[in-house]
Amino acid sequence: MLDVGKWPVFALLPPEELRLIRQACVFGSAGNEAIYVTINDEVFALGTNSSGCLGLGDTQSTIEPRRIDILCGKKIVSLSYGTGPHVVIATADGDVYAWGHNGYSQLGNGTTNHGLTPALVSTNLINKRVAEVACGSHHTIALTTEGEVYAWGYNNSGQVGSGSTANQPTPRRVSSCLQNKVVVNIACGQLCSMAVLDNGETYGWGYNCNGQLGLGNNGNQQTPCRIATLQGINIVQVACGYAHTLALTDEGFVYSWGANSYGQLGTGNKSNQAVPTLINMDKERLVEVAACHTSHTSAAKTQSGQVLMWGQCRGQAVAYPHLTHFTSTDDVFACFATPAVTWHLLSVDGDDYLTVAQSLKREFDSPEISDLKFLVDGKCIHVHKALLKIRVIPIIRCTEPGNSALFT
Image (cartoon, rainbow, N blue to C red; front, side, top):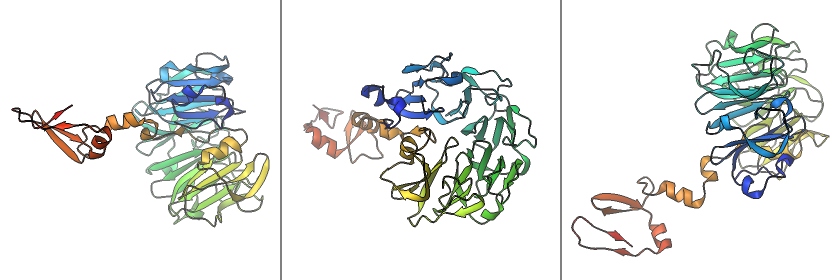
């Protein structure tokens, strides 16, 4: 079961419905829109439905979940949203679907007409498998399994990386100095984009007036630029807030840069930083950083599961990382960020949402984990001693031809 109870938009769902949720995303200007996936891989939406962002075919608000038929069974692996809002997903098959606000072609369909239902984004992606998507305020970027980045939508500051400031109506490969590089992680601020390479290098492009690209200046960049001051530091994950950026190293340290008026850089002051600055956590190694382009809040998780937060927290400016009682960075954004949205797609691992009976059924007759086997009619059945003891199943050995054991 996925704990979504901290987000008010789910307050009216009955407990039996909440127990079925496997993935969820909360978004919108007030955290009043949500899309979720059940254990049966059905997709539902509820909320105010601004610009048709719920993908239901209309713009009617709904406090009761309605099913998005076209997405059922698609197996969503990545989901992101803009502030229009628009929504973009990547499926397990590598397909990309987009819907919602489209005033800047952020749906990638070549038009500026809002999309009321999920539509396949095919231009230039038809033979590509997309593994991850990320949205800024009104632009979208996608990462393929081959490590290529595609971008489209609003481009007033160069955030689609095309070398100009003209809006990009359909997906376009972000090349320039990424041409022969392999990207493994992407993120978007409101008006900028970030990418991490397989060798740990980090690149940024787009709006930079708060130093959120980490380049040591405040000039916008229309193509990806490497963050030179991180030379020799292996970055494994990057997360973008409204106008600030967090980066996690392979050694568990966190660097921050960009806007800092709410202390979201965690440096102890409110001065913007145009170059990456190491945050003094005074804690064990960190394994995750979290930020969301709709807020000025930052969070991180330690190896032992402790969660820290800083930045704008319930309207207050917290300039140093503050230890919380949370066990997930998601809780920080549910309880302290404004608006209360999710910073990424909430998801539980497959094993987490199986019942005990389902788990046992899946492992029945599994030679990998069994500790006993019986020969029945010439075939082996792999069993577990512990389960046999629990069930107290009498085993009758007999001498019938072809049988070595019978079960009663």
